[in-house]
Length: 250
Image (tube, rainbow, N blue to C red):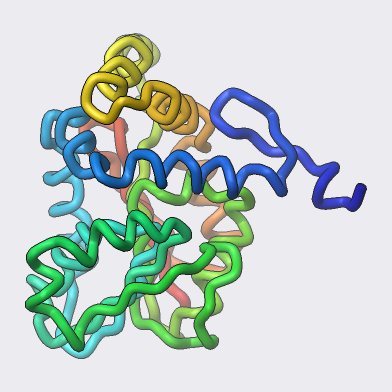
């Protein structure tokens, strides 16, 4: 048994060997790929669309920029970026091929040939050269990575000097009573909804648990700084149910 096999991480509320997590996460997203966007709408009552609009507002896409969108398989962020910067280019990178298939099948994809690439890859070992991109985004994906600091280091590596990282992720509500109420909704509504709509309760149980294991806003901001980023900031969305984190490679 080597060192990687002995190291432990979490998969929801379970402790697993680090070398097992990627396969488990891949299984989750392979199973839910066809219903992923529908479930996002149902779970958030459509509010995730407002969060992604806020992400684009802060990111301020510009023509000629090259964006790497990691864990962006269904193309939601890519299409929004290109709507605002028609002269830009987006590479969508996701470890789950079935998620990329869903993205390529969306109607928008056919109109964006030449401005949009789909690449299977791991956030912890990106298949791109140093300083390849102007912007890096990851939306509701960083919490599923086995080693988050390694993924952030890879983001720093592939960004050009002056490049920007932006992360949209579920976070922590600052008021305990509000967090308690949100937890009751998450654990009692989302897994049964996953069973009803996607025929998969267990995957959505994991997704709810993974949110609770993700660091709070200040802790995650510190992780971004540790990866080398400057001017790190965050903004709470919906009182902290989700948060946007931004950092610059200066």
